[in-house]
View: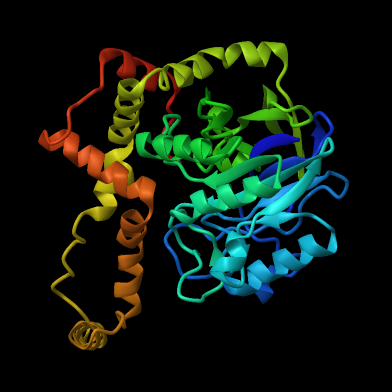
Length: 401
C-alpha cells in the first residue's frame, strides 16, 4: 500500500509513474462529474472545491473523505461522490449520511492481512452534527474506534486531515493525540492537510506521518511554488507481523493542458529536498523543539492568516443611499431580534462575516495557533523559538497563497 497526500485533480487526467499497489490518499473535494452546475455550493469561509473526475480509471484507490472540502457542495455533492466510488468499487471512509456512518472504518486486504482505515478531520465546515450528513470530526471516539478495529484487523491506519496549512511544523497537541492513538493500537497515522510536506517519526510500534503534502494537484493553482508541488509518500508493507515501510518523494507537474503527471522525484530532486526534510526531522527532535518550531511557524503567518481577518471591520461610510440605510437598519434589527430570541443570525452580511472567526474558533489547529501566538506575545507562554528555528523557518517556509 502506498500512503499519499491530498488528491485534487479537478478536471485533469492523471498519468502515473509510481510503484504499483493500492494508493490511500485524501480525496480533498467531491467528484461532481461533467455537470457541476447541478450542485449548489455550500456557504463557508474559503473556496468551494470540486473534482470533475478522479483523473485515472486504472489506478487502485482507497480514499479518506473526512476533510474541510468534501461537503463544499452539500449532501448532494457527497452523495454523488459516494455513489461514484461505490459504482467503481473504490473503498472509502470518513463521510456519510449520519455521524455513525461517517465514523465507520473501511477494511482493506493487503498481502493476506486485513487493514482497518479510520477517517477523521478537525472540526471545520461540513462535519456531521446533530443528525446532519457530513464528515467525521476528531474526538474521543477515535480511540474507541481504534480499539474496536484492532480486535478484527491485523493493522489499523488512522487517516487524519489535520494541520496548520502551509506550515511544515506539526502542532504539539496533535502530536500527543497521535502518540496516544499509537498507544491505543493504531499502527500508522496518515496525516494530511498542511499542503506542504511535514516530517515523520517512529513511535512505539507505529509510525506517524504528520503531513504528506500535495499528492495530485494542478501546479498552476498553487503558483508552481515548490513545497506545494512535491510530496512525501510511503510504501507500507503489511505482510509480516511487524510493520515495514519506506518513504519516497513524488513530484506533480503539468504534462499537457488537461494532464497532470505524478512521478517519483529523480535522485537530483531528492538531494535538493534533503535540507527541507532534515529541518522537518529537527522540528520533531524533542518536546521543546516541537513547541519552538510550531511557535515559529504560527507567528510567521499570524498577521496575514489571523490578525487581519480578526480585526474589527472598518466603519460604514457616512454617506449612504436611502436604500442602503434601510437595508442596514433592517439587518441590524433582524440580528438584534435573533440575539434576544436565541435564534440564529438573520442577515446574510452578518452570517458571512461570522464564518471566518467561526472557523478559527472551532478548528483545533486554528484555535490553538491563535492562542499560542497571542500567548507568546503577551508572555503567558514561554517563547521557545531560537535563532536556529528562525533560520530554519526562513529557509523552508513559503508565503501564504
